[in-house]
Figure 1: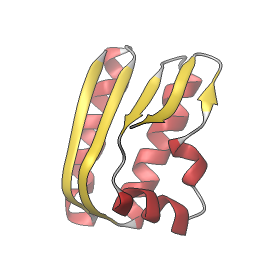
Figure 2: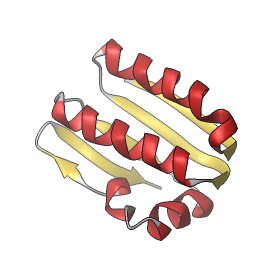
Figure 3: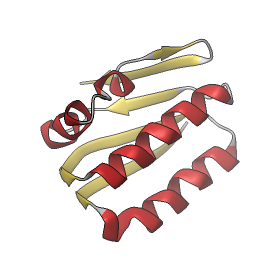
Figure 4: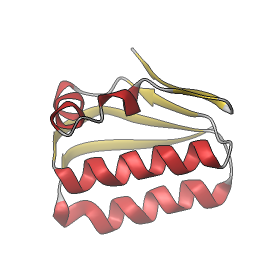
Length: 99
């Protein structure tokens, strides 16, 4: 299982790099984990990228585990009405938050 660790501010300035990292995970075609425990801030662009990534991983049959998403990231997902992204299950594997 590959792990992507996110930290600091996930904003429009970091969107391109985040998109490239997420694309690399999809291209690898393996189960993955996202450690989001150190995210201090996330804007709509970052949340949309992460949400799209989670949907695409599910569509490809890849398991995704969210490791300890920070309160800031959870709140950003909630504000956009996408909080289920951090807790959904897919037929291919768990897409879930872990403490």
